[in-house]
Image (tube, rainbow, N blue to C red; front, side, top):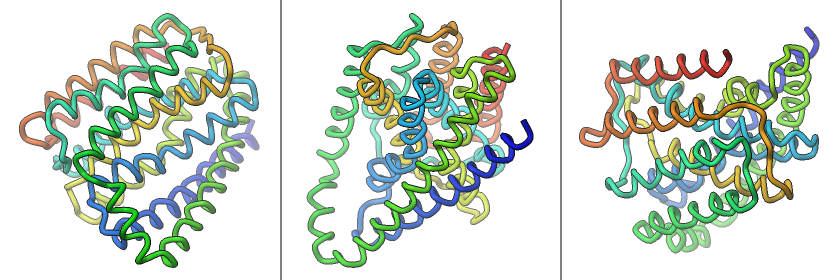
Length: 310
């Protein structure tokens, strides 16, 4: 058990380093190509910080334990909105959420993020439901990109900075490989821990592994605190959580059959909806979260953790 724990935490450190390489390289690309902060964080950083979840998902399919990636992806979205952002608000004595979303886009984004929790209430995720998850993300992407013109701008700037950008893309590929290999070990150890502790792999993915695979998002939050920047790019967190939803659909399609889950998921759905609704209420007018509001969201996560574990 001790050796398994050692490998688990070593893999988390390696995953952190790989994800850090990805984030650092992406920041260089976004500055060089003059991509707006929101566009870069939502479309690019939001996807790349979800690479650990994708790696865990592929490895869990190979291990024939798809419930791991279901718990990990749903738990990841809960972690982002009920733990990471509230933690930043608490430690930073309130934060400003930098985003360029009008009310309809913000509501639709939160709907895409919360949809997986709704779909697993009946204890399974079918191929048809997975296709729905895959479909809603391009709609969200189009509504954002149409306004920003991200793709055209990216293409024009890439041509003039091709050599440097390709070098950074290579670093991203290296970081992705490191993340994938460390995720493979994390999946193996998660199965071992679940068996030894008598806990379902879904719950362990929901409450434990989801924290590890969100280390890139946590590192962004910690960096904001250490540098004294109270304004964070909400685009990254919304983009990452929305990417979790589409990854859930893609991985289930790759799995080739519906994923049957043992646990009762009404609690997960209730807390997800409650958390996202409060998040919207706190940010809809003033685009910030106070320290008090951060405490409220974090307490909801603690209650969610206790009730799911119980």
